[in-house]
Length: 400
Image (cartoon, rainbow, N blue to C red; front, side, top):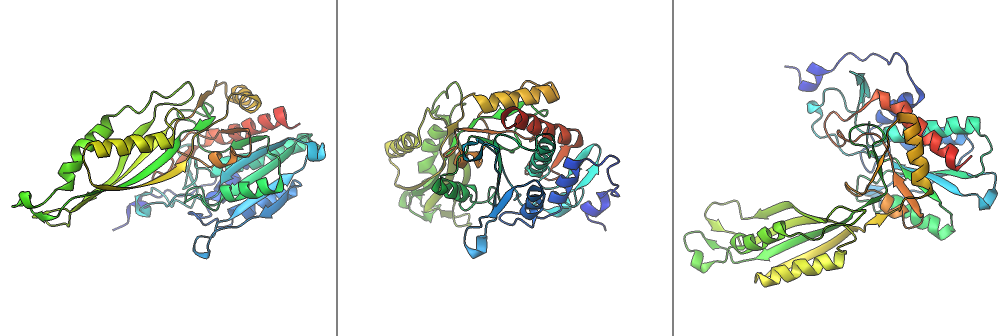
């Protein structure tokens, strides 16, 4: 019996009107760059950038068992060292495919059907990378000696721990004194249609690993045990019901979510001795990480729990207030798509949080995101060239 993938895989037919962005996106998808692998994506992009006069530098980092590929590419403007710098940033790595037999076609084949391009990374974010390169090529053809500089900052560790990727490159650029004025990160930001959303900030991420200590025993003799599930339940109910803040003019309210919970030995007649709970805050500046930590610990102590709690601050919130970059990008989107974009700080974390440490104006803009990280990830073909055109128009507004 054929597997689901083989029984539904269509006969591949080349696009009737292959476009530069589609062509390059397909080439990138065909490289299985599951984090931290790059699978040749950065060299493919670097080859195109070298043809356009970019100086390309590989900046690998990380241990041998998690070697991260990083690329810094710079084309200096005619103003020399005084030239402002616009950076295109993104990641060549993708998340794992999950069960490949669940896909309607091979996730690394880049198959077109029904007006869409299917493959892992189609939306997150190989189409953006392709569009950035195509946009730069078109811009330089029309403006071979731009005033400002253009740069690319690429990593293969955004979907992984994000320890040896963009943060490593930013540290190196800071050490060199490299100037960065504007940065566009190609994350898939839109919701319904291309152009509806620009991300100009992100909430912070604070994770906790909570161990509630009880006393293991026989379920028939509860008086001789202390069930940590029963003990923790009222505290967890209060945590889930707590309103942490109301957000502010730029950020939605802070949220708290349980991501994993476990207790017990697997036997039905044993009271567990310990409860493990993993949780996460996505927090706005209205509730700093230290304040959230104190509030949680006060609550646990008020409920009389014996516990151990480990905290991890994965990201601090950041915000780029409306300015030169967001205005230029919004105007480009409107001119190309007729859509008036909204500024938003919702969603997960991205590498923009690292770039914001060394660049005042950082925004994210890319294709619609409904299928990212899913089986049958895809992008509508009609969005590819307009995405490149938006990037090109932004270059014309800021760099020419």
